[in-house]
Length: 128
Image 1 (spheres, helix red, strand yellow):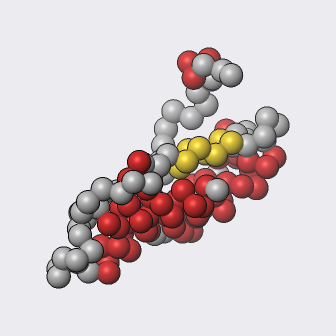
Image 2: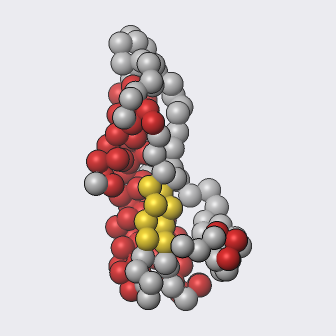
C-alpha cells in the first residue's frame, strides 16, 4: 500500500467552480474532461454530503424538498459521478478505484437527522 504523500499530485485546480449537484451535464463534463487534461482518471472519491436542512420526519414544517436536497447531494450526485467516471476508471492501467465516504448515521441513525440518515444509508447500499 502506498502512503498518500508518495502519490504525485496531477491536478492542483478544481475540476469546476460553482458546480451544482443537480447539473448533470456540467457534472458529467467536468469528470469526463479529466483524462484529456491529466492523461487518465485513476480514482474517484465520493465525499458529497449535506446536513442542511436538519429536520425531523414528524415535523409539520418538513417539506419534501428537504428530503430531495439530501438525496440529490448524498445519492444522486454520486450516481452521476459514477456514470461519468466508470469508462475512464475501467481504462486505468492500475484498475480504477472508487472511495465512498459515508457516516455512522447510515447504520445507527441519529435522532432528528431523518433525511441525512436515509440518504447515507442509500449511499451505502449503492456501494454494495
